Image (cartoon, rainbow, N blue to C red; front, top):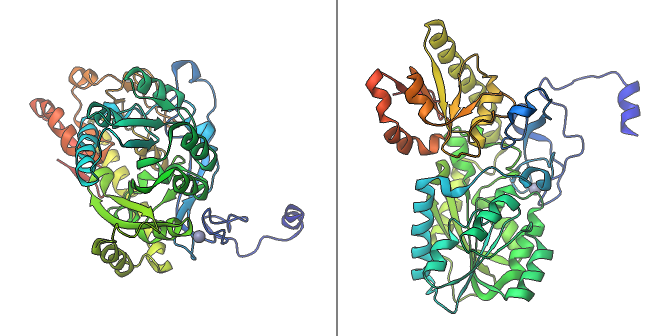
Length: 430
Ligand SMILES: [Zn+2]
């Protein structure tokens, strides 16, 4: 019906960037979406590495236009690609990051202490990946269960002896897990809340699986940090939502869950760890930190459209600065290689149009990525030894959240005068 109108009516007053939403609705509150937060063009799925056999085939590209809902302030991408397609053969194995393992180990100690977890407790992790975190609870004698939709990483968890159910989490899975294993005393999910298209089904499932006096903890990148630190490259199809405490409190409250504490973490460029419980479990009091952060988000402007409107130009400026640097380096005959093949690197490289004309190759410690090519840009992924073999002038660090760790690991590039480049928050050469 609407297409016949488009065919017969002249196009007037068309937005230079993107037409209005075409009927997109907020995944939490169902309000129509009409405000663009940032438009990064189109990209392929950021974890879908191209194998040598696929080099002559096409890749599907999907839009990366991010909306902000002016009713609940949930920042979101439409579900262009289903999670089944995205996570079917996921290439990210948490255990390959040393600092992330350390983060997980400290978390398990802190939770065991704070909530008195012991042999009688049950810990359930949503999106448990390769068992990188549950292994620490298990070795403390606590009963664990992982729920992980990506079959290949779940297999790695099984190999570690971590019981893992290969399912997407939601109301249906919650009901069957509660029946087969019992309710969860600690229900956790790190970097998963942003990855679910049906956020109501996911949080509704947590409500069902949580023991009466149980605790939920979730970590997710903080939208305020994304904006303040210009982390637009963390936008990709796997991340359906970009979360503030303000929006997440609304989602949890709609499902009878109260956020009783919140911590700000440095992981992934600035994350929140929220603590939630049933709204009826009042002997777990709400700490002053919740109201304090909610107030700071309001001061930042999280509930004003104008705050979101300035982000796009900041992003376009970053693209121009990075291209300026690369053009100058190449004009001077210098070589640039990448370090890492994270999802965020692919958003950056595709948005900026950077291929092997600027970056010869990238390296990654994950052997499953080596020998393949980055999606879209087709930059080869090699073993880290390729850096010592080729002695590049510049190493562009793609996972900028691990820049300190990587700069130490690769300090040997100083021997031949090599330098590091970090593109975000702003271009830096050191
Ligand atoms: Zn909304």
